[in-house]
Length: 115
Image 1 (spheres, one colour):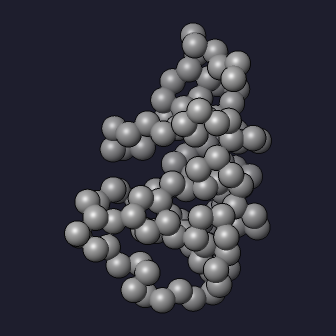
Image 2 (cartoon, rainbow, N blue to C red):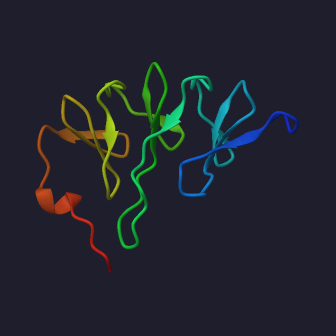
């Protein structure tokens, strides 16, 4: 990959789980680089992980929103928020992963099932 082992550091999500990291020049999700992500403004958006809830791996920088290592097309990075069960939301509506699913979503999709 060409990662600098000297400058590489995990990006903390508040839960002690490190799916993201940076070497100062590039942001990585697991072992994949997130093309175009700005390490200086990059932040993880997912909510606190609750047992039984679906983990949502959204992040953003000053220009765009990402789901794992992919850009979420047309998402508004200023209003975007991570929800549960793989959903996110911005001023336009709801997303599941990188796909826009509409201005409304069945409320049952946004309920945490504690197994």
